[in-house]
Length: 331
Image (cartoon, rainbow, N blue to C red; front, top):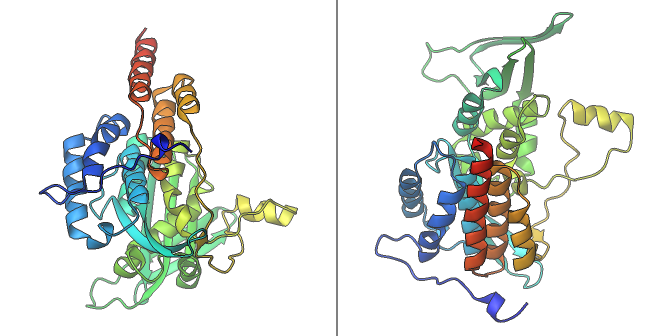
């Protein structure tokens, strides 16, 4: 990589406490935010998240910028309800030093918001069952069934016992997923952020999100929603392998997780994915607005990771391609 390609973005901060990098990022955020999300509101909430989470200030800057871009692309607000930024420690394989990286995590409210806005499902509900609640789950020839009566008459409903999610499709199909607290804890155990962040502060929410993730593998969802639900996959040390038998294929169809492996704190060195020419080609060949935004998020993340500034001609190419796609759609 040339010295020019390795130009580092400035690291100074403004009087508001928001890094200059994030101010530079504003134009890229505006490009990928869905039309229904105001960029001024998004940036205001982003500034608030920065000011209330000191860990973000000392975290790896490239991962922070990448997390912001993904959050903007999904159209969720990093307000703690729709999405959060969590910081986890990982080891760099080249230097051997531990670094703090930022991961964007959609939360249950944000996922439900996207499902509701998409109109692809009739409904999607999820809840947590506590020890003193009345709960029953059974299966018969008519399908899966759940009854849940929360015990609201006691000051303490006890510990979390289970979580469940129920989705209804527009054609009348009903999908149900139930996970015990033991199964949820197994998922938590392979998270790199299991001892900090949402798993500690909002266990109930993470339990609900975990069961939605499991259920989503069986649902007819758009790639946009699937991408949002799976955004925090990087936080999990799950063995990725191909199906070697019919049993494994069945497990995957049912949404069952692969066998966990020992967490590996080391990460492979980041490899540059785009040079200027390949980035221009990715922009020029996008055929829909969503494809163009996907390409831009990937390109921007790659330039941030490798400390390069986005060329002016690349940004102009994006604007030209977006205008051409909009004109083609309206004709």
